[in-house]
Image 1 (cartoon, rainbow, N blue to C red):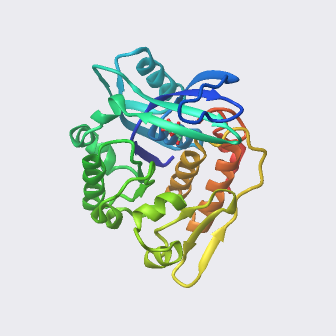
Image 2 (image 1 turned 120 degrees about the horizontal axis):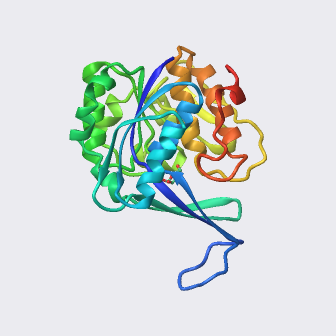
Length: 290
Ligand code: RIB
């Protein structure tokens, strides 16, 4: 069993479905409201665990009701929560509108602001024994920097999923072993560079996800597009997280890049067939061995 550490956010998703999104100043009647576990870090941890990895989550929750539910959900999904700290205050929340076949999300960081370098350093021993570390950008910039330095020092491969989009330090980009932005995130990450130029600059390292078009990268000789699987889409929330987790699992099992991307695309395609970020995340049985 491979060991994966996920360092990131854990939140409660407050999800409204509606026929369309409101304009500024407009009030609309929605169709439904649900609270479901989310947060990019927790989503990736749950997805990797369902796919068969031993997963450690490093994160923070608040002292509110959501905090308890988030931790319980991680544990029920087999994720180790020894490094999930309870912080006095509110848990992270994501305010999601699903309308016209897509989502819009506002994230309120809450306890996720407290995912600090100190917390990560307490998990240092487990990190040093991990086959892969996964990190995203719903936690402080200094923590992402610290993790990238630590992984480089300890020679532990790091996947940086630079979501949500924000300017990322060059040092962090260089230290990560794999980068998995979507097109929008890639344009911020490589300011002024087109995708074609960026993937050529980082062969075998930069993988740009393009939704239904698949994943694009440069293998050192040629550009490769690994196509996505056709699916019946119910909710795309968490598809990127499932992709990243599955990519991490496959790579750490020793699958090559192309096979790992096929495995990740398959897992992501299954994840969108049910409601909620984690609702459709597949088990290993669902995806197979790729
Ligand atoms: O990637 C999907 C996640 O982004 C949601 O679960 C929500 O919590 C937001 O952070």
